[in-house]
Image (tube, rainbow, N blue to C red; front, side):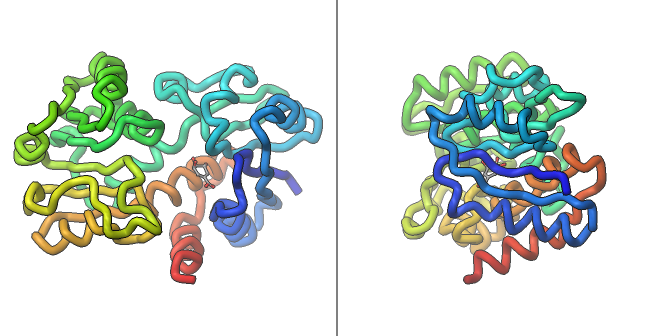
Amino acid sequence: TQLVGLFGHPVSHSQSPMMHNTAFSETGLGFAYAAFDVEPENLEDAVAGIRALGLKGINVTIPHKVAIMPMLDEIDPLAKRIGAVNTVVSRDGRLIGYNTDGMGYVRSLVEETGIVLEKQVVTMVGAGGAARAVAFTLAEQGVKEIRIINRSRERAAVLAEHVGTIVPTKIVEQGEGEAAIADSSLLINTTSIGMLPNVQETPVPAEWLHSGLTVSDLIYNPLETRLLKEARAIGATVHSGIGMFVNQGALAFELWTGERAPTGVMREVVLQQLKK
Ligand code: SKM
């Protein structure tokens, strides 16, 4: 059996072990996935453990996605651009860092909504880690324009400057949110506003939404956030965060095993788990 796993802190809530172990038994590939709760001061030893124990790879989650980068032998160009790693693969004794969050998101968005990326004018709420992964990947995949709404203007400015080297990107100033969304085709919430238990919260007032939008929320707990409910009610296309989670895992699975992941089965396990 080849071992893979998750380094994070905390990790007990993670759906990844269940999702990947189901995928591994489904495909009979002889892999197993375990969650390791790694305190920040132990990350270096934990990475040495990947080498010492001969793990095939790992997923990395909060708070280690940035800190692990200098401990690896090589970083994939997209992960370097995003500035975070969520998947490590051990290949010929070398640890290579990837980021499958952004591509997982884009794969799910395109497969589930059928939108054409080249035509999208994107307004994104948030400028944190998830926003970076999504923004850089969308930019590399050739969307038309990206607009960023964020509480801290400074953080938005840093992201806009970096992403702006790939596609036109601007900050949405205070009071200009409604106008920015009015002629956007894709609205993405990358913040935790609306996540359990704060399901009554929403990042964008319902009055700003319109039926020409695809509204996408990275949150998958609840599956349908208030934002998505309100978007669906006015006839917009909606996209839930479960697809990003499943597909970031599917891409990691593919990097570790070299085989296509059983995405449908993975989605089912996570859905079942969320209903509990
Ligand atoms: O990027 C993913 C990571 O691969 C796994 C994960 C989890 O299991 O909670 C969350 C995200 O950070």
